[in-house]
Length: 87
Image (cartoon, rainbow, N blue to C red; front, side):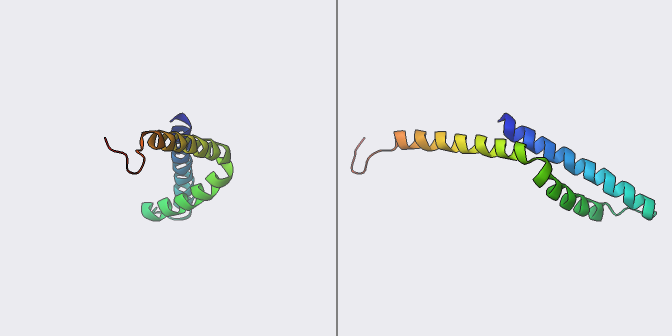
């Protein structure tokens, strides 16, 4: 669970950093910062940035998820009854 958690925490931190930067720049340009639009812009920026900056963490999380799915599938196959087999 650690790679999955690390990746998601890093995405959240990246989004919050982008939100602070966008809101800061927006406040320099205008007197009022619409938080909804600042959040939308920050979401887009953090999404594009994470594609490049968090590639290694995303791959580690994907590998962890794949390994967990493989273990679950193997356990399911081991417990599955053959067709026509009774209790």
